[in-house]
Image 1 (tube, rainbow over the protein chains, first blue to last red):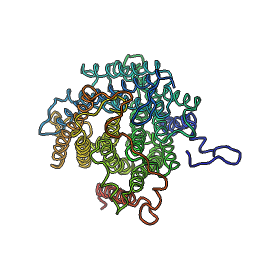
Image 2: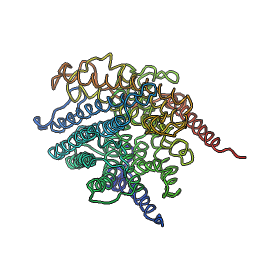
Image 3: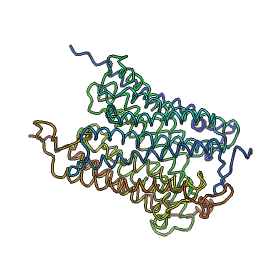
Image 4: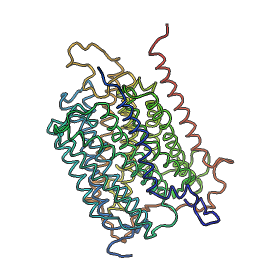
Amino acid sequence: MSEQQPDENGKEPLMQRVLDNPFILLFVGVAFPSVLYLVWGIMEIVSVPLGQ
Amino acid sequence: MNNTLFRVCPDTGLKFHRPAETLMKANAVAAVVFLLVGGFYALLVGLTRWQAVHLLAADQFYMVLTLHGLNVLIFWILFFEIALLYFCSSTLLGCRLAAPRFAWVGFALMLIGAVMNNVIVLQGNSSVMMTSYAPMGAHPVFYLSLILFAVGALIGCFVFFGTLVIAKDEKTYEGSVSLVTFGAITAAIIAVFTIISGAIILIPTLLWSLDLIAHIDALMYRLIWWGFGHSSQQINVSAHIAIWYAIAAIMFGAKPLSEKVSRMAFLMYILFLQLASVHHLLVDPGLSSEFKMFNTSYAMYLAVMASMVHGLTVPGSIEAAQRAKGLNNGLFEWLRKAPWGNPTFSGMFISLVGFGFLGGISGVVMGTEQINILLHNTLYVPGHFHATVVIGTTLAFMALTYWLVPILFRRELVMKKLASWQPYLFGGGMAGVALFLMGAGTVGVPRRHWDISFSDAAGAVYEFPGAANTMLALNGVFVILAVAGGAAFCVIVVASLLFGKKLGEDEKSPVPLIAEPPADADYEGIGSGTITVPGTLVFALVFFASFAIYYFVNWKYLGETWGIS
């Protein structure tokens, strides 16, 4: 991202470093839907009481 | 540069790693073959749902519908996406591909899986449609073939990520990767989540089909399967939007209005797009409203906002580049004088408009829990995804392919006149299909039933309004147009690869294949007053007005469902 310039210490802004690291993005991109969709959904289903 | 391992494209200056190039070609050719197969089945499906024609018997219909769904929604698209991942990493970053032999293993697994799947479904005992909802069971080979295909695609994703590491280590680029490569990273990340979800559900289902597991819970299956089934279509969204940005740069030398904003929009895809899977579960019992509404009415809207950002910035970047080149009069001179006869541009632009207006608006309507009850499991759903996946993704892939034939395969395109018409035929046909399927769904026609007259169901007396039959007939007509457009694409591509004039490695194409970008100074003073891209702004306002009107019309329909006495 050429629009963002390094700060006075020569470090790129945090958000740019996040966006430049595909493995952080991979972790976030798998963890987020896994928790919000798969884990939450599975917990709701397993907490449904069994029919008598 | 090692000349035996790399070649430089004389038209674009792109550096092709030869092993990567061969893999891209193999994946692209396989993709087109499966598109051809799946497109043929599309014709049979459309002609069966046309009540006056009603071509196939019930058992054949479900078999053909299964084949159609898997060949075009999974095999065509994922083979093309793997080719795209290799192009966006190795070629756009100018580096060698990581582990080409490993990539060939992935390709072989995908090919074996896809062929096995077609064979087993054609045997007639796995007509479970793409969703293959348990406890409706298929032959074990059906699940095994999908697992093999998914493992192959996962290997392709790992090769892509490995190539990003090589490019960084070998410093083949400076700063950040290009926006197009960033879009491909988004697609690959969503692919990893998709394949993990597929593995979680398909491996136990395979064991269940082998009688090694006694029971698969139907709701659990649906929840996890849609993490795979819907997310697989979100890979497409990221991939085809990356292609929109690429074509804007190729055809016009356009640069994004704001790279920061476009990258943040892709980041929102990574975070929120997969959550839209819940809209398939909005009427399922056992899942709370909190779960349903958070994932659809809140999180999904953030992904929708990201799509609207892309839908604004891609035409906006084209408008800015055209104005910078002197087409600065009025609101739409930049668009009127765009190269509408070039299938790469026209395909991309129809993809953008169809995806936004038809696919995007209908997706939000379906993702609203209250309105969803009107449309759930009706033909509205295939109407929606034919707009997103076929007009949006498939047409974008076709548009890029026209550009790739001379660049990647070093062949001149043949049948150029037909090629210039093909996106209109395919896009127009598919827009009709999407609209009439959605229309039929709005009057309640079920999504999967073979025959809406229920002629084989004793005692069934429900009669649909006459409009339903009209919609299904019009759908059939537009299916024929769309299939003709798809067939034209396959014919043009295959004929070009076989008979197109060969271009030498250092021979330039007779027509320029990449536009010069305007100079920064040319962008000064473009537009109208302080508004740089007024034409795109007008488009955005028309889009929002259409969105709001259609959304509230559906609430009105809902309000009429139950009268208040």
